[in-house]
Length: 601
Image (cartoon, rainbow, N blue to C red; front, side):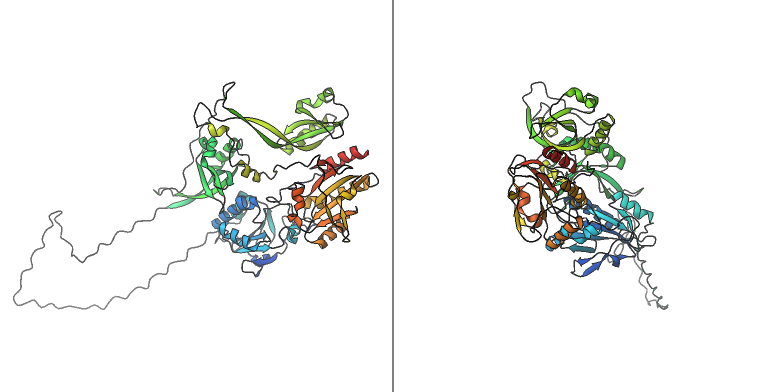
């Protein structure tokens, strides 16, 4: 049985990146490979030209949601905090950002919109076909590498806090203010002696008229009083922590009243089209304590840090950020009365992980009593009438994997499978307690957009449908269509040379093909690549041995991906002898099990 899973990643937000058959060794302690790309001024800017500085190499793209909403704002904050500082053995800290984009104007706009105010920006117009993805052997965007002053990698994909710790370890020294030159003293004027000759008939000088208010002498009318200079309010900076609930267009704070008892809600601009919704102003300990409560409603919420200005000790200056709210006990609305008419139901599609215990002709629950306490036992009918037995219903794959290990210790085998299932949820439309609790039970308008941060979006099934025909060219430029393979059990395999999980698993797929090639089985693979030569090279390097290998040179712009409802590459479908799709979204373990059942091996 194969041990590796297919990795399925969202193309529009978190991108599967290329992997060569023999990737370079890029790890902590190795020299960062050279990068030579054009900068904003259309001139070459080499990564090596920044040696002598601490450099954060940031790989990103304008179409990467996580880059623009999470990482780039953090890097702006980090750069602004440490720009101008010197470090032990390093002149400064800077960022070298590499954008994978085919649209230069969009790249330039995004830099301006997001205030990416460091000067070292380069672009690779080959986008996700760039050779730098495989050169750095990275799996997803955003991705980053922290380099020391010699260009050696000292950190990979660090969080904001980890990056800051690395900088602090190198003893940052704030820039020294430029001393104000002392004014050159003006030499005193030569002393002169004035001889006053009294008049012959002296006139008495009248006494000064006393002021009626304070009996002091009235100053001359041409005297300008000089104000006493007041010292500027003393301030300092402080790091606080907030919980980001989401980033979406035109959010409404009223939709987040279900967590407002935990802290103050606010909106901050993220890009020209998106705004962040933030909760509270906490210490890091408080934020981490409250986060699990928030994730009951907003599963993508996370803690972000901010630097604010506060009064220095003894100063009366006003802080620029509201102080953390007092700790409160969460208010929980009472359940509706039995038979309440204020309930509504909604059906949602959710993704779960289950442990598949096997596929059987008959199902007897007593045979599975030894693992029944690990989760609910469930069954599914296969297309051939057999019964698939499933255990549990886990939100996290790691929990399912742990349960599988327990299953194996009890003398049973199995695999972890993914299932998308509909659930009916009952919610309250209104309550006798007024609108205070109403948002707690209402669907959130912006949730559809927030799902874009889950990276596992819902997908329309192709099961039991006739596979749309495909007719493309093979390596020798002769066309071959998918429909020509009717009469055989066919594996339809959609991939790309830049897909790391595809390239990693080709050895297993080759072995599978060799095992079943002499049965009523065949493979029809479609590579979505704009570079035919790169595709042919990958076939040779990975020793792909089946005959029906074709290429779609439109790449990910191909309408075939929409026809098959593919959001991820690679993708696998099994077609029966009539060209009907009988399995999809398969891991290699599932693929092997299904072929063994269909082909009798």
